[in-house]
Structure formats: C-alpha cells, structure tokens
Length: 501
Image 1 (cartoon, rainbow, N blue to C red):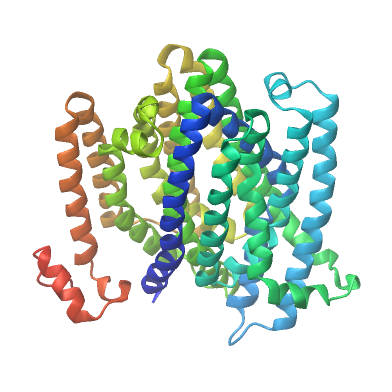
Image 2 (cartoon, one colour; image 1 turned 120 degrees about the vertical axis):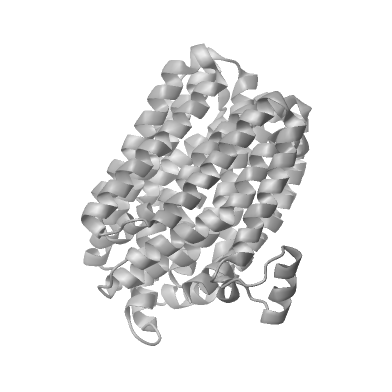
C-alpha cells in the first residue's frame, strides 16, 4: 500500500535525517559560537553562490535523472532491465562531468575578472578555488542521488544521509577554529564534497558497471530528453537561489551583518525540517508518481492521498516549532539568535501551505510539464522577492515573513487551478478542512506567543497531542505503521482511541 511505502520512506530517510540533524545541531552550535552571526551569514552567502552555479551546471539532473531511472524501474513489469538502467546512469555521469567542468570555468572567469561588490571583497583567491571545488562536487553528485531515488533505495539513501552528514559535521568542527578567511569558504563546501565521496562509495557497484560502458553508448536522444525537462527544473531551481541572494543583499544593505546572520539561521532551520518532511516523502512519492504516469494511469488518487498524509504527519511538527521557536534557536545557536525566532514563526505559517501544495507541484513535474512547473515557482518567488525587498526598510524581518506567506498563497492557488483543469486533480472537502485546521491552529499559537509565550507553549503541546492522536486514529493507521496490531492497539489506548477504522 502507498501509505506503508510512505512510512517506510520516512522511517529510513526521515530517521537518518533526524540523526543527521543532531550532528548538524552540534556543528551549528560550534560554528555559531566561534564565528558569530557575521560568520554564519557569510557561510550562507557563499553557499548561496555555490548552489547558484551548481544548480545552473546540473541542469535539473536531480529531478530529470530521477524521472529517467524511475520510468525504467516503475514503468516495466517485473525487474527493470539492468542494461537500460546502467546505460542511463552512465549517461548521467558523463553529462554531469562535462557540465561541471564548463560551469567551473565560467565561475572562475566571473570571480577573477568581474567586480561583484561585497562578494568579491569577501572571497580571497584561496576562497575562490575552494568554492570552485564545491561547485564541481555538487554537480557530479547529482547522478548518484538520481539513481538512488529513482530506484527507491530508501535504506541506501538513509546510509548516504548519515555517512555524508556525520562525516561532514565531524570535519566542520575543527575547520571552524581555523582563520575565518579560509574557514568560512571551507565550511560552505564541506557538505557537497562529502556527499560526492559517500555517493561514489555507496553506489560503487553501479559505478563499476557504468565505467565499463564505452563512450559510444552516450545517447544524444536520452541527453536531450533529460536536458529538456532538466532545463525547466534548473531555471526553476535558480528562482529560490536568486531570490534568496537578493533577500540576503537587501538584509545586509538595509540592516546589518548581524541581521543577515539571523536571517540565515531562521532560513537554515526551516530548510532542515522542511527537508526532513519533504525529502523523506519525495524519495518514495516522486518515483512512484513517475511510474504511474509512464503507465498512463490517472494521478488523482496518488496526489490526494499524498496531501492527506503529509498534512496528517507534519501537523505535530508545525505547531511545536511555532510554540517553542525561541527555545529552539537558543539551543541550536545561542541566545544571540533569539531574534531569528520571530521570523521563523512566520516562515512556518507559509510552510503549512508549502507542505500541502508540493505534491501537486511534483505531479506537474512528473507529467513532464516543465514550463508550467517553472511558471508556478516564478510566480511564487517573484511575489516573495518583491514584497520582502520593498517592505524590508519599513517592517524589517516581518517583511520577509509576509512575503514568504504571500509566496505560497500564490503558488498554492496557481497549482490548484492548473491541476484541476489539466491533470483532473481536485481536493476533497475533508482534506481541505484538515489543512485549514492546521493553518488556523498555527496562526492562533503565533498570535498567543506574541503576548503570552508560556500559554502558547501549552497550547502547542496540547495541539501536538491532538494531531498525534489523529494520526493514530486514521483509518489507514494499520497499514501505515510497521507495528503488530496488538502493539498498535496499546498505543491507541493511551490516546483513548477505541477503533481506528
């Protein structure tokens, strides 16, 4: 059943990300204490630049490559043909290698011969070379991620997350005590470098088969197919990178380096938990959806079911994050970063809409509607960037939060209308009611926290327990959880649930 597969993905991928998060918290604590808000802000700026060039150079291989592998895995009865899969993986490796070299040359030319203001002043000659290595690593790691996601190897994805995350965190701590001029660029590329190294190690069997394939097997039609969809994924990926770079520059110029650090802290925590929820689910959902579409089956049931599950499972996290945001930032960073908690609360409100609309966005992408996928994100990020940039001088951090909420209001409206007209996907009343309940609960906790933090935390805990109870009481809970019915009944009894059906 789909629900069991989702829980399986969450158990392996999400569980590994939780463990990785603990090590990331330790790393972030050291970095925040040693380098302060200014250092944290610069790390975010350098990572933003690196991700910008890596996103351009990868040309959307993260998604288009996953779709290509998943179409082989899910679109054929029985086991996937090993030759077809190996040749596709080989094409992805060759393509990423060529694209990474071209991208690195362009990056070096831009950094060496153009004046980019604050960025040029902040990065030394050694730092430029370090960031170039990060770009090469980020692009060349794409085929391995696409292979694992396309094959739905949840255990191996979990191993990659743990191995790369823990090793990168362990190395980052001693690096943070180095001179800031070299430590900051190194810290911004360490995750990408270790991700590539660990990916090659975990996919070594597939790599051995791929390297035995002659270069003559490089397929231009396959490259064109992957690049066509990948191009729209790539330019869509540039929207958040470009938008965040603009927001960071606005914060730095209109505010201060400290405020840039607060923004980076709030955004980083949001990315971590959103990645935990979305990443673990998409590792199962996107390949399955690609297979459904390749077989010519309707996607209505899969999309609605995914929205229902993600709303159900994310609700306890959302309410707790709003209620305890101040404590979270003191623990993850330091008391200096408590200001970031106010922005983070607004970001969580926008994430309610993001979490329930992304399954529709994936359906648009899996259908190969690259232009529409780009248009939806273009509308969203344009709304965010314009509102945050124009209102920042008057509202400060509130402008970023307001822009973020407006961003996903616009995105949700667009994809809902498009999915109804083109994909024949409509949301049922119960699903919409659940989403509205989560949103109103989060808004209520946010408002209460402004005047009475302790009361808001109490309401947050109670809301979390109520939402947790709704998970256990869901009719699909028997198939969702890898527990024996007798054990599940005992857990339900603690929540006063007599019958989940």
